[in-house]
Length: 447
Image (cartoon, rainbow, N blue to C red; front, side, top):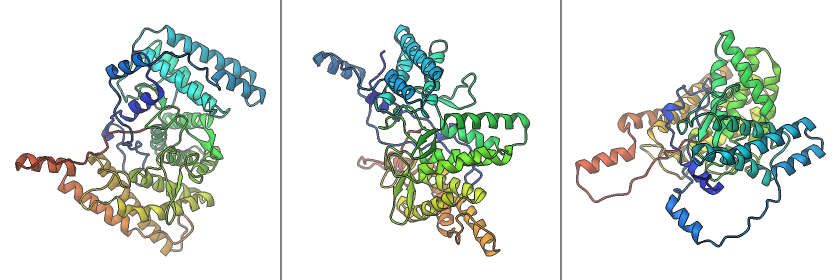
């Protein structure tokens, strides 16, 4: 089967189901590794192959127009501006040509589809004039990893995170998009490693963070860790507020654990993505503060992602005392506190503002994150009362709402552990009644 068009690949990636239990198993709060991005219910179903074939056959064949901006053309421009070296130009151009040629020679099937998908992502980034000197290392690393994988290895299961030889990062398989760097999972691993004392694990932590520094690209005036594939309507490259904060958190921990200030210095510069408005940054102005968006390509506001970002920012602000991070945390926490009641349905919680109910897994995650913020702010109150500094340098935010809502969500889970939709379904099965349309919780995990 040939590789799907970009729009179809975006829909396919957005519809990939991954359960939360398989990707996140840490407690919430300042010490937690970042959870997986929560799925976004923004993509319609993919048209069937038969429908697509019919549509294609009825279209008049026209000569394909050559793209205005190409990978090789953009690389030449970068070299002319002396933004990349002559060796970079030669290496990346040869890699691009080789990946295209190998994809064309592969027999029809998964390997060919996936490698062609990654080549198309590379073309798309260049075509949108986003192939900058800072982004190029991660773009061509992704191309190299996929060329080597799909020409020699079998396809992993959808959503799997296979070990990529020679890379300390976490990679994930998104059907139609090939293997992609999963930054959130990478930084979650680093967060966990930073809690250990084992020399081998600390060297693994160093390897992850050194690679993260090497692959950080410039976005919104600071270093960012961008995703390089079509997802949920977003074209590459795009960023994530939650992944960015988790990266900052892991770098600050690594700096403390490894005794190297370069990691913390990069973390503090990375706050810029959270201080610039969407779509370049991840900030969305709110009524009383700033919402930190899950994705830079949509203004959808997701409760668990925003709560996790605020929790991580608190840790970075408390550890470093940096004024920019502190002010970003204060404004984000203020907006989160104002928004939280709007996610509450009374017996369950919404996944996103104005959206559908959470799945039980996400409801559990939201409960844990709120409980973590409750403990964090209670500790801040004790520090402030003792005359000690707290994150933000201001009187700490009151913990009451976080504590109350965390307990409410816990009660929800005890009352209806399978969620409100499942509870209604059981009731309808027990007592015959007219069919009703239930609310389906999001079943999609995101990068």
